Image (cartoon, rainbow, N blue to C red; front, side, top):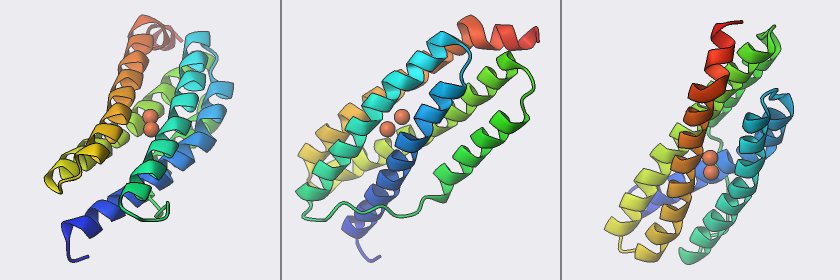
Length: 162
Ligand SMILES: [Fe+2]
Ligand SMILES: [Fe+2]
């Protein structure tokens, strides 16, 4: 990698891989959630996540590249931790709190990545890509805030009394 354009392309591939993993994982999280608000949050974010994949495909087209994923160990690690919690939690409320925390780790990863991509897109003179990915960044932030609200309102309180 010798240029910022190449680095930008590499991170785009990283987050494309991550989003595609999340499209697979979010239905599992929805299914495992026992709190109905949490289940709905995952189902809704799944639909948004499919849109994130599409936006990335548009971004690839805007730099004349084919959409390609590049294995992202960070998201695989977060997903593995979530799966561990699902396996090991022996109480429904503890399970909900654990998967909610894993999901927030994924959202924070996405927020970091999209923040970087938006800043670099602007610096590289690609404001349309910055605007496009900024929409995703805002959806990730909202998803994260909603998970925080659900945690504070219900899930963590229930889990603490488990
Ligand atoms: Fe996303
Ligand atoms: Fe997300």
